[in-house]
Length: 511
Image: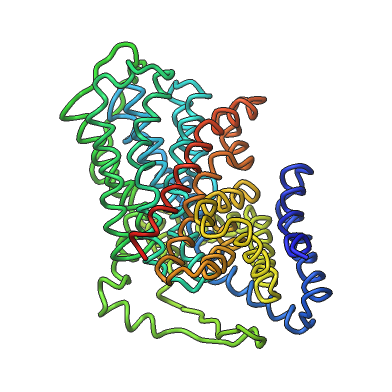
């Protein structure tokens, strides 16, 4: 019976990893399989299957897809207005040492893009920038795959963790805090690993870089933890990335690195970017930060009234159903769109131009939209039918109280299959909390184990075929997919093992 409960997931493994079927087709068929199995073997009625599907569509559209579309639109609009060109120029003017530029662009700016947009931009843009300024393309792609492992759980304004909270019933701020703690060792090591890769694996590459690596790691981790634990997941990685970039720039100025072995060719003299031009280029992203901060729980006078503008609808009427709430204003997607339109207008784009960019963005995301709708609907059908619960009982029966050791691994499989931390959280989030309850975990430990799904999703992102394909496309080199995958697996395996140990032993401190 458990194999039939697993059938939608097993189908996704085969369809995406072996048959290389497009995600939207594979997930659509997974939805069909879940409905057939749920109705044939789990006594789910046609009405309840349809209601579960509708609830999945509702969750997918509001807020998940709204945030994704808004975030990608903001990035595309910055390309349209040439604001991104100014940002690139500002970043590459900091140093001529390739190790510094790899940390600044791959770690700092890549984290910022993941927090703001996600969905491949944090690999494609930094890797393309690094290759474009003369860094070995394979090296550029490799360091960006490592760098993107840490912020993935908070991508697109925290949507994986917000989604995880929605499907598990756990508090998103608690999940964000626990995820940050679980990822802390990798966060501290990541700049060091990137520097080693940048130097071809030689320890000599660390000469003169230790202070910067420590500053880059601490500059990322401290703001990330403070924001995650006080405000929630939406701005945690954005704050961390800003802190990291500030720390790297500060170290580059205070402790200049001048090692001829790692020096990049000198730039042709160009006019420096003025403060006004810099602020104008960054304005949409600055406004997103300000708007999300202003409407957060930290400012109740704004947050509380806006949060009352909502509607609750009972979509699923079967056992376990609860009203689904649409928050109409105080939701990140709406605020991001507002920031993008204001910033785009200041940068000189007309309203019609911006609508054109938005239309193209939605058109380019059409398959992603279908994929997310169908994968979330699949998870809802599996959850309400009892399929997820049966999988959880089987996993617990096989591992017992050692289940937390494999929680992160399960999350990594979800991202490996789908290429998305959000999809992994949808597929396996409920499984994690059901398994935690089955071993008698306290509510706090249930959230800790649920957070492990997002932590594992970060590891899976490194080896996801989708991430590898994006990295290869961004550097303009063909036929190196296998080489990059082999590289990424060397980091994935120890990462997921260490995460398993952290989750297992860490439960004692949160429970």
